[in-house]
Each structure stands twice: as structure tokens, then as C-alpha cells.
Image 1 (cartoon, rainbow, N blue to C red):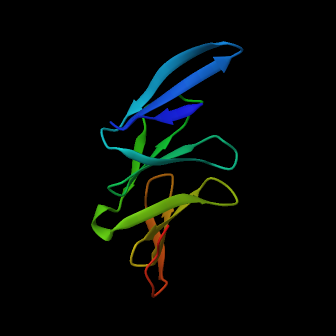
Image 2: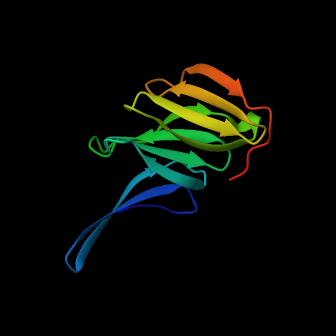
Length: 119
């Protein structure tokens, strides 16, 4: 079970029967608004309220890596673009859909929907 604390800490709870272990996986120092697993569960996107997206690879147990920072564009949400784990799609409140490469956070493309987006 992965859990994010309000302070921006990603926590993993390993639960077996009535026992559990807690491990702090990453501290990104920004409140995490959502956690999204890739389709094959090899990567986890950590999305913040400020529009920053981090990638965390549970199998590697390393630090979360900042992929993109869309803080200037009224960021609303992000998710993996399937099939595969190579791309991320994000959307802004103003209706701009953006495609990013997950490997290095490179901006690839955008499409303006021409309308405001709400969750």
C-alpha cells in the first residue's frame, strides 16, 4: 500500500496478515495530490497541487525524480499515456492537453481543447 502524507512524503506499507512494516520512500517537500501507477505497475507518478510531476520506481527504491514542472500553467491532472510507460499526459484548467516523455520530462506536444476543464 502506497500512501502520501500532506507534507509530501511517499510512504509504503507492507501488510501481511495482521503485521505491517512502514517505509518512507521519498520526500518531495510538496503536498502530493495524487498517486498514479503505470499500467504494468513499474512506475508511480506523484502529482502535486503546484503542478510538479515526479516519477518513483518501486523496484529500484530510489528517490523520486522530477519529470516536469507545469506550475505556471494552472495544472489540473496527469496520467500515463497508454499503452506503455513512456509518456505522460497532463491537462491544465484552461483546457490545454500536454504530452511529455517520462524518461527525461521533455515536452512533446499540446492540444488546446478551447474550454475550461474541471475534475
